[in-house]
Image (cartoon, rainbow, N blue to C red; front, side):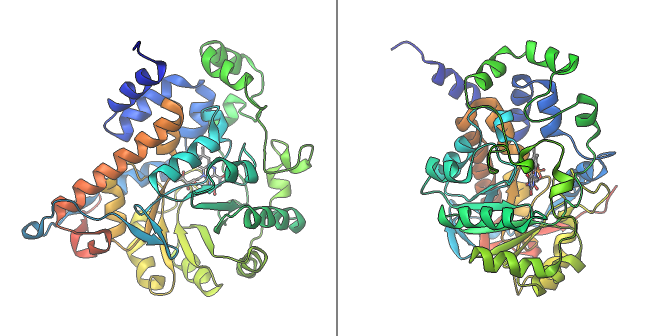
Length: 390
Ligand code: FNR
């Protein structure tokens, strides 16, 4: 039979052996302003760099006499089974990366057997994402709003649509300053300027795909709601989240709450004391407060302080299964990835997200096997050392 477009995409994706390979393919497929929005970090991008430098410090201490053939990656996250300890992190405006957006991502999560967290700033609605993958483990990421009625409605929809947990993000009292976005005049829907017009002219395929799907908007808010307008987020989002808000969210939602955006032992203890079911060590992928610690470096102290009371999850800078293994060994129950799956999405839609997860899965399998760990719970702090920073 004649080759189909799908075959070509699959062959192209199969040649990607690392997340960096996917990243290189992704970059060519979207206008520069969209690339900058996804790829860049806040301010001088110190946290963005530190996140990677921390993983570069990892040095393995294998138990080579215990090598295993095929380690078991399956685990439990928040008390339910997951095919591997990886979660797809919430990302705003996902349909900018590829017109199939959040629906393609949640379907890939379902195929891979891992949870997906939908952002408050999603471009596909809470019910539509549920309908796209009814069998997926779905979480909802909550940006708490000053108007609690709006948040109550988000939590009601998430509960009724079968989302099993809420991630309450606490690191966004103000939107971080991403200089490239400001200079590009980035907005949703894309705003017209010389720069964006040039970007669109050089990416006609991206433009055609966007134009033939639903207009890009903040789909988790009702059409016309002031919350759904670009640039008003600092005014409408709650800027003073308190520990007592954790209990409010938990009571309104009626299910587990993870506190996302913890970058200090102090906040980890406060979140656990406030009744969180998990803390997510995260500097938002270096997109919020610049110069925060790399979550990986903070992990041993946080696991020590709260690991016996709550699950500790980690994101920011995970780019391989080996990175994931390091975090698991140092006490994380699961890792989240943000940009890596967006690179997959840009490079090849849902199949690109599949490829991203295959790469992580294959790395993780190899790393555990060579380290001599039969399962993810067999990873211990004795397997890893953080070399001194250069
Ligand atoms: C994010 N992140 C994020 N977090 C959140 O709580 N709500 C959100 O709406 C978003 N939006 C968002 C958009 C984009 C384009 C990116 C890249 C990230 C942060 C995300 O959940 C996660 O913490 C980081 O992406 C993890 O770092 P890595 O894996 O990208 O290095």
